[in-house]
Length: 336
Image (tube, rainbow, N blue to C red; front, side, top):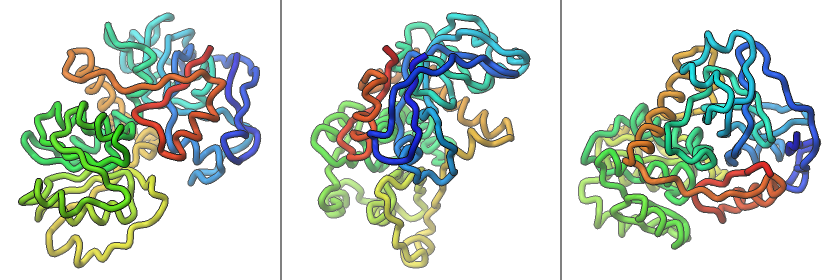
């Protein structure tokens, strides 16, 4: 099979398409013929050698995919959340996987969900990471209620656009911040009531015009000074859910001045810790989030994700676009 392999850490150019044996499913595993692999910021950090968890070379990157069931390993039936994921040919999405940048990939049976009828199998690769993080940030960690005001940072990114869509679908008023006009337009189309640029300067004064009493919930994956500015716009008792630090710089925050007097509630969300947990309840939280999103999508309550499809051979170009923040929506790699 064709696969993207990394044999040394470095820039996007270290990724090479090569021929590898098709893996055989072991106990509790399902072999999936990959239709599309999602590209994530964490992939670029794994490739560069800056990922918090050390990786052994060589490896095939990617932990997000959709595709069709090929074959099933022993014991998978006892782990599967839905028996349909055991039938060859079934269109599926992996809640979490490994070595997704390939024509075939192994997925634990409890991390597979069948796709509802009418869902595009390639577009479904946009759901497992971005939409599960957005769902959990809004509902599981954020406790979103109808008619609340949600402030979304980096609203043109995969998670940001998903958060805008899901918050609007839940009846919230959404204020979206993004870095370019194209991303602002996408955020408005996704359901944002207000969309403002936050580069080169955070629009604090403009936001005060819209937030007379402050936002109820902040969704942030940027970190650094942007997070600090967002916290200042929360109402007393407001909540913030932080799931990443794409800015690459730590936040300089005086907790007493910024958080304690206003009784802000800061909550973290680490999807990776949940899917890697040995506790099935943790893994189940992510699987449930993906299932909720697929249900909304199948019922027409959620518009199709914004997905850009690139051939597997252009993995380096996808990583370059991810690193320089020039992309919008979700980047996917499609095997030839």
